[in-house]
Length: 398
Image (cartoon, rainbow, N blue to C red; front, side, top):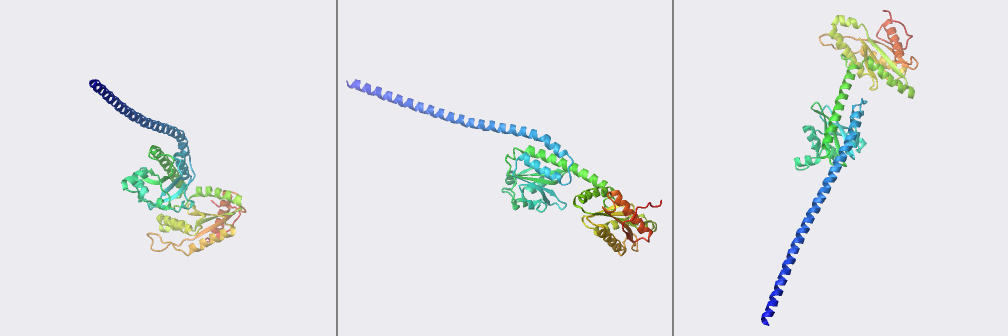
């Protein structure tokens, strides 16, 4: 009996140990299964995130592919002066879905002037000057590549403030616009809805498109400036005067303003050339050009009309004001001897002039010039060094 009891106890212990061993095994398996499931869940989350990122990138690429043709077309169009920076700002906002965009143009002294923007204080435009050396702007100017805020902070250990940030705008990125190895402008982007590091290729593409548009616009403006400018004196020429008159004529008709034109001709200019030489004559023309610029209003257009003849277009000036202005210029010139290089004595220069005013003296540019020219001829015929008011149109002798 005792042996039987001992055997039963041994069996019970064995069964218990087996049960415990089985429970431990099952617990271990369950733990392993739980860990495997958790790993699968993590991988599933990662896969879901990767799939979403792929979808986002694909959607972003599709969006960009839709925007690019429109961007290229809009930037390739001929833009009036000042319109291209505004377009660049609008395209930047559309592309990056930003809350703030600021465009600053490089000035001759190296600083940057904010000229356009969205989401920025209006008072910044045309007044906020930025240093080209500090912060993200400094990095972008030096390296001529897009600078992200995170990259800038990593390089410096901590972000270095620029004038833009001191003024209140904290950019996510600064995009330099580079033309012929020089930074001509920067675009600062803040509050972008997307990740700027992911959008870096698009930012570089935009910078290239804008730079190309700036370069083409600059080339066209330069050609137009040359076509409209007298190379000797730097004044505008006759073609510019005709175009400017049409602009002022629209204003005059809309608001009832007068427009006056004064024509001046240097008295006995051939004698100056014969006595002092053509280089001295050229110097006289340049000095007279400067003299006229200094003694006319900022709103007036001073042009070299041809040869030794100059013209001043005076918007909003009636006939009395125009005559007084023209005669004052004549009188002051008479008292101002010109010092000409290579000549020991100053050259005495006088001018004769004629004045005409829209609308009473003519309705077109050609009419006004003809009336002013008739007055100029009358002043010459009556002794020179004087200004004549409107005269009946006469044919000059050949």
